[in-house]
Length: 104
Image 1 (cartoon, rainbow, N blue to C red):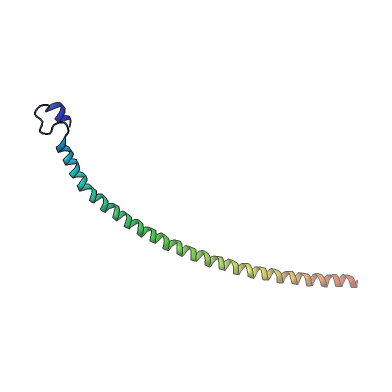
Image 2: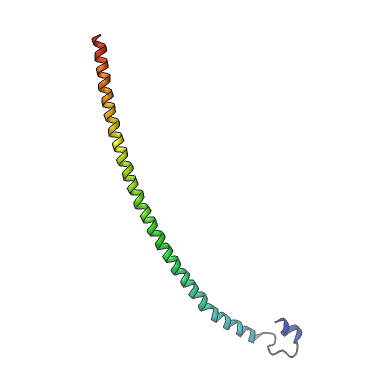
């Protein structure tokens, strides 16, 4: 454009509205558009695969967490039952001690 307006002022082959330049730029845009769309489609496919992979990993992690929660609940139940058993033993020992002291 600079050459057309400044240097080749009177003998330019594409005068001021630059119709030929607009044609070239339109053709360039027409060539670039499908390439850009193809790249966007490829990226969308990659994103879908990544999302599927993330979903599978999250599902596996959720299953593992549920399994660990079940194991923790089982451990908690066994500890609670052991603690209750120990408390019963302590109560019986305290009764024996009280009985022995009341006999004295």
